[in-house]
Each structure stands twice: as structure tokens, then as C-alpha cells.
Image (cartoon, rainbow, N blue to C red):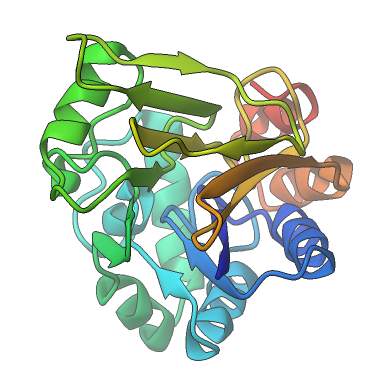
Length: 249
């Protein structure tokens, strides 16, 4: 089974559509959306509806911290993100809000665990930014799990840990490269952001895991970020949210 892993769409319809087109051409069997459907961007209604249809077709959809902020408490967000969260809440209808509220924090398929942030206290939304956080994440998973897929950090990276050392190592994957998930290691893939990359590359980011072959590939997909930025400006949302789409920051 080939599962396309998408995360941190952040109400960016253009980026989502580009990733869906790209993954369909590669022959994806199933989708998993790892949270943060909303936030920052200007198309929350269209994105939530599109992801809801994916779920109806069998996709796994998880809750991210920005999704939680819409239906619970936005006080953990920075002021700009809080402004967008409150605007987003006003755009969504009751059915869309109920959809977000019902999303789980984690899901598992075979050797794969999916979560928005970290398997360590998933509801706390810890950032997987260093070796200590990666080790904490791996320590929290069941023995049968060999790969954790996560988003949240907006940067594609592949962590691995053999158990022979106290630290986990990582590297930045090359777009399109096929990586064997060696059975002697445990792995964490932070798959980057569909709708708001922050690694200096404005192209949308997603990954695809082949469970039968124990392989993962990361992809960067160009999209019309100028159109997405113009929607943000027209909606009167913070201008930095539009500017950063062109620079991937």
C-alpha cells in the first residue's frame, strides 16, 4: 500500500490541489492528512470540505494544533495566528467545525504511526526539532512501530535511531529520492508543510510511504503561491502570511 502523507495545509487550496494531482500521477492508494488543515491561509472552507471528501473516500485525517485552536482554545497561538484562527472560526459552518472537533490525534497502519507533532504526548504538540525530541518520540511508540510520520515543524526531515546510541541522527531528504527504511533502525519522518513550507523552499512538501516495500519518498511540488498570497491579502489577514509563501519561510 502506498500512502501519501500530507500535513500543515493551512487553508492553502492551491498547494493542496497541486499535491493531490502530483500524488495521483504516482499511483497513491490512500491518503493521510496529519493535521493543521486550517490556519494562516484564506481558504479554510474549501480545504476542510476537500479533506472531508478525502476522509469519506478512506483517508486518515488527524487533528493539528491549529485545528484544535478553532474548536477549543487559541491562546497557545501567537497573535497573528490567533487573529487568523478567530477569522477562520467565523468562516466555517457548524458541520465543518464538528468535522474538525471529531478528528483523532493519532492513527496506526501496520508498522506506521501517524501523528501531527510527536508520539510523545500527542496532545501537547511537541516540536521534533532535535535529537532529544526524536528519542522521546520513539520511546513512546509500540515495539511493532518502525516509522512515525509527523508534520508540525514545516520542514521535511528523516530521523533514524538504531538503539545502539543515545542520540538520533537526521538528514534532509532529496525530493523524489526513494529511501529504504532499514529494519535495523526506527524512523521518524517529518514530512514538511503542504501549505506553508519554512525551509527556504516555497514548493509544497509531502511524502509517500510504501508499506509493502518499506520505503519512503519526499516530494516538492511547485504551485501558484502568488494566487494563494493574493487571497490572504484580499481577506485582510496578516500580510506576513502572504509574503512568506514566496520565500518558504
